[in-house]
Amino acid sequence: MARPTMAQDIERRIKELILERRLGPGDPLPTEAEMMELFSAGRVSVREALKALQAMNVVEIRRGFGTFVGSLSLSPFAEGLAFRAAVRHGQGEGGLLELMKVREALETGLVGAVTAGVPAEDLAVLRGLVATMESEAAQHGRVARATDRAFHLALYASLDNHLLSEVLDAFWAAMDRVREDMDDGHQEPAVTCAQHHEIVEAVATADGVRAVRAMRTHFDGIRHRLEPRSAGASVSA
Image (cartoon, rainbow, N blue to C red; front, side):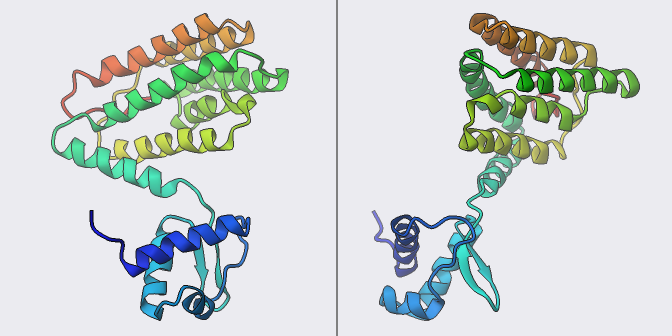
């Protein structure tokens, strides 16, 4: 195994510093000169480490102001997923299908937990989104991706898990980027609306088995539209 470079070692130590000082997004970090002294390193290595961490949203460099803890968002993760899927799509492989299968595993595993208790206000939001889907289907003949995406994120709001929300949204962002290169293969809007309605009703009645079955049925339709296509297609999910 190759030994880490000086810059990679500094990356690790900056992360450790953030944890040790219990810093959060927006908090100031030591100046470049202070890091050079703190890590006994040259300017080039410190700058290289900071640029690498900035690309991962771990730090934010504000010229003229200093260096701060970054947003720590998962956008680089989403970009990596999208690029990987796009490359596989370009090679005639099912890049989008792979993304969808991972999402299916996450959501079918989570929806049962949601049925343990969803607040009335969250159910109202979900029902409102299904109503919006029905309106979009009637007016435009398709369900908007934004509405579909909002439904799946709202479904797990009661779990109060910020990381989970970010991971799921990262998969949506990745799929949205990949689909720009693909043909449309949208499901019948009436079927999309009916499937989302069934998911809500299963959650509302705290029926975990029904909720998992409804989610699997939803993903079955998506998977069936993707599998026959050699390069994958854009879908509502």
